[in-house]
Length: 464
Ligand code: OOG
Ligand code: NI
Image (cartoon, rainbow, N blue to C red; front, side):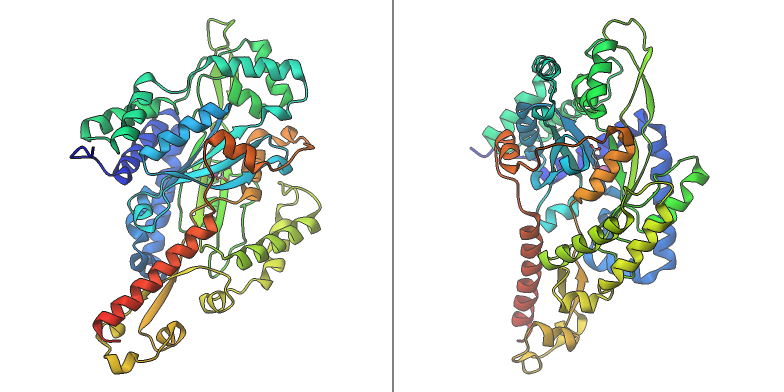
């Protein structure tokens, strides 16, 4: 059944990610400015900090740095989510992780579609944070039914995109010509629409319930709401943003600045107010803000113990702040974060010894030329100590629920906070998705183990 000349899903993803970036640059001019700022900062840093450059060369991440970005979308129905899952699968992207945003007053739960194997991530680390609106959390039953009926009428995929997804599923992939069409057609789902699908009054009602509900329900499709480049130093970019006419949110989400970056640090700038036309208007006389900018800095993936420590310190700092971080308390928040995170070891050696972070192992030059007698009987620790192997932190590829909530909040406005009686419901999410989500911690453990196995078999064949 295998058709010849199928294009690898990794290359489809790489192409799609470029096409998405081009579309977004056209739609949101500030995105272009941000990309330039990030590219400049990265180039400078690589020049000034040889240690960072060396590390990125050694893991190969240097090659993916310019390609690296994540996007986010929000969908309204189980069917939309399940079809997106199939669409992303054509590009080798699978749902990783489950994120419950209700504790932050945002009526969605989410996953991240991304490649899962380190070699696929190397070709394109493109990821999409995808949220499903939880209509069951709308208490007003009339409004809930209205939202359901509006969503039931829309189709967020082109007919051709659906055909190509089905074709890829049946034939194990797409050929060059089909890929070209697929990228073009799939992109349509994520495009911005200047016309709403409801009247001005209906929009107001949806928005009054929650701004996010209006954002999902009142439009033809799940417009991509941001596309985030990866910077090597988020503090520099945050400080530079105002100089370029971009106002960032008050605090950087995630861990504080450290010698050894861990997990993910993020900041964003406010959503654009965009002119839209409601169905009872000829011209675009209404407005809606959905699309914003964001940058991120990625650090090491943490083990379950490391993650538990991170969560504990973050919660302690936030509890002490006694409020959501904002303009007024930003300095105090940063101070509290620094103080609490002193308890988080900040050398790679300690992070490894205490089992807090994941690493990848590599055979050093010394290891390549070592004789069997030299390597005899040495375990992983001894091989590292003797310099036959070296390690690099494994980069975190996922998201953080508290940070994501902060990003949602700052772009929806603080008035958007609500309190929901119901919380996480991973089973319902997976039922809508049509499959299980993948546990991200398992993926990191596998990548680490593969690198250990590779090192040991390389040493064995050269001497051990
Ligand atoms: C997603 C917000 C979360 C991140 O990077 O954590 C996010 C959204 O606003 O749809 O993008
Ligand atoms: Ni984001």
